[in-house]
Image (cartoon, rainbow, N blue to C red; front, side):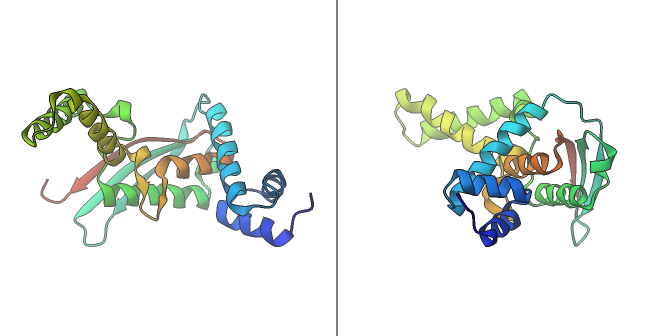
Length: 197
């Protein structure tokens, strides 16, 4: 199927993926732009999963100070090569992640990084809250499970909605960056400072 060049250009502008991959995605989806974006995301996730096992020992440490000098973030993001780590695109990506942390106050990068005592405290509070609101005992576990999922969506950086585009999660932004660079990229760790805390 022949694909309109303006569609390829628009898809490339919206996804940051190469021209040939955009053309292929549009061919696979019969020229449907939205389906092509979804197709590219799916392909990007598959490729990112293959890269996930590769060592990422280069990268950047970013220091971000929020206007007003009351909040600061130190963030480490790793890549496989210093070539990628030194690009402007990688720098913008890391800075945007640091700004996300400043704006949303995550507890950890991923679920497994949340300390067990914090998770247990949250579960206990959710259970007590459900009990005091008069919910039946038999559905308490489901209620707690649902609230824990919401907690993860707020507390885990990778599961948060991206503040610049709430339709996407930070994991989507990371996966797209891996797809564009062809490297394994890891958001390793962060520390957030708030004046007076």
